Amino acid sequence: MWSYPPREFVKINFDGAYDATHQKSALGVVVRNEEGLVILSCSEIHHGVSSAFAAEAIACRKAVQRFNKEWIGDENQIDNRGELEK
Image (cartoon, rainbow, N blue to C red; front, side, top):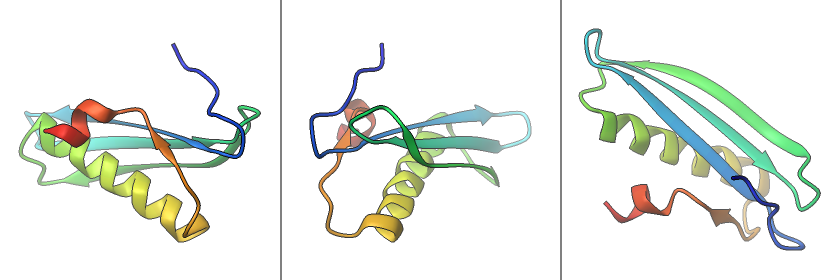
């Protein structure tokens, strides 16, 4: 279940989906402020992806890149911690 980020924080949610047959992945990123309002979102398709783990890693990288491009220096909270620890 999604929860609001702490005051003066944003929450970055991301996910990757993997198609092994075609070696493609899709990703989605949503950044919300402390009020739950979407302040940034994006989606992409990638070709030549070799695994579900790679799809999640690409999604994580894109989330951080997009956030940094818009708000360099702001603190953030990433809730896909399991993917970051692999």
